Length: 420
Image (cartoon, rainbow, N blue to C red; front, side):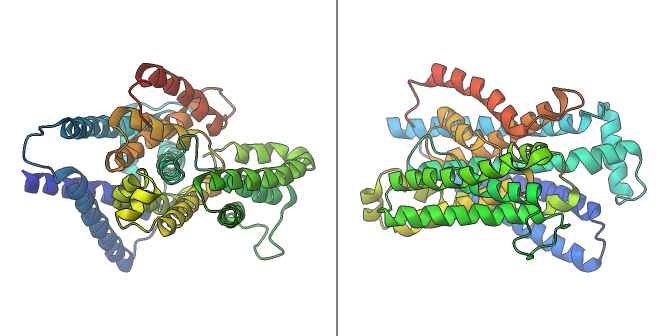
């Protein structure tokens, strides 16, 4: 049975990886033999990593029937995870297809959308019709970007909440969003090029500047927190202090931005409108890779929840692990906000939603967060495009509007069973 499940996982991983890679490859018009060999190697590596993770977290079961409450609780949560993963995969694929059919430019029927996808692959991205450009050139890259950013922010928020051990922590608690926003405002409003280091006409100037500034803000937070004692509360307070400092500078620049304030606000509240296939290569691959890797440290994150003293007794270097995971999550957050802007609430709400359903075991919560984060972000992006014709609404506001009622309902219904 395990061999059959492993083979099915391998086939599924190969199919999904090859589908995404082929679309990225064709869209970039890379047809050289060396590129195909490299692509095949990457697909095989990703597939085997997927199978190893699958076997570790889902196939390593105890064959004996659980006889105590703890085993029954774990088995129940595992079953919930299986249901959530299956339903989440179906929901994500359905919303992804719906996002390709619908948009501000009009709604296409499902058969036309499928034909446009097939024709796009056959033509290798050349001599495309209007429907093919609309579906594959505009909607598909932004939908894949929304999917990856939703996954990245959800995993980053989950890591922050586990390391800092505070349920109110989100991916921007370390000052990353304020630092990134300050640099973005400087570039958009004043064409700041970091003293000539970058070209003012570079399409990646805002992304590079916001990522660098976000990491600088994170470094300031880490230094201040370590100087203050390195406790969990020190990280939170240091992030608040650094974030307020960068936000103050950002506010002053926004006042002086003049008529460019609209462009500034568009970035600050998040948008996938300007995502193309070229930008997608710098978003999709790094975010998905960095979001899957933390599954390896799920057990260590569980140990951290027991407290620093207990974790040290179990052989974990707590200080090094905390620093590494906070840095890792901050880099992931910086990549997420560099191209699409600041999208709040998602990294805070998704881990809570998943814990309410499957418990607090990170071996189960992390895979669940991947699907839930992707689903919410795709839905929010679709609503942002369709709610107000002629104007694209900020995705960050939509994520809050969609997420708050769901969170309130779950909190009221399951709050007594939720132990954090």
